[in-house]
Image (cartoon, rainbow, N blue to C red; front, top):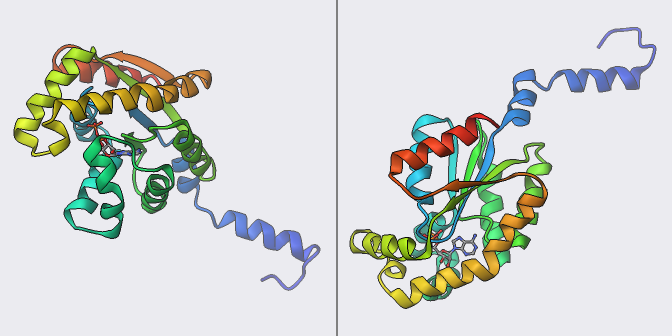
Amino acid sequence: MPAILIDGHRQEKTLKLSTIPNWLVKKFKYMKNIILFGPPGSGKGTQAKKLLERYNLLHISTGDMFRFELKNNTELGEKARRYMDRGELVPDEVTIAMLKARVDKAVDSEGIIFDGFPRTVNQAKALDDMLDSKDAPIRALLLLDVSDEERVERILLRGETSGREDDLDEGIIRNRIEVFNNETAPVFSYYRKKNLAHKVDGMGTVDEIFRRLCDVLENL
Ligand code: ADP
């Protein structure tokens, strides 16, 4: 510290501020945090994988996280199991706590792709609070728009190879779609009101859909 201080307090403050590296300030401001949104079977997982190959983004999928917990027989997995088996939503407080712990650990990426979250307006509000406190808000929600029938077909097909039990039973699939229509669809309106929602045609080849998503992302 210099020997002569005109205003010791202010000087200390200036020093503290100047220790935050510029690149870090910039990084948070320009993070492209996006929500990949769509009903079950709309192709979120497939497209998320392709987006990660092209951009330096972190993929956070609550479905994958729950499946990991289930496989490892954790306490969290036990809590989630009965909901997942029925195609229902795991309660918000469980899901939000899990997601928050994951986001807090996310440091070194140019943004996050949220896949399968938020699934309720309550989750969306919690996510916005979380990201606002990091000065890195959601930049866009991208809805993959696919017809009902095409989606059920895609899921049944996936079930043949994925080994996911919730993909093999048409009753459970229909229930997931109903839960989406009732509880999750309002998340789209929530972000539309904030002018952040984009609808992307989710029919066609994987590459065609991917190009449409990239177009939106690159123009953000
Ligand atoms: P889908 O392929 O049907 O979109 P996911 O892999 O995203 O499914 O999720 C599988 C299951 O995990 C859901 O049916 C639900 O039970 C649970 N789940 C995943 N994400 C959430 C969430 N954000 N809130 C509540 N439950 C969730």
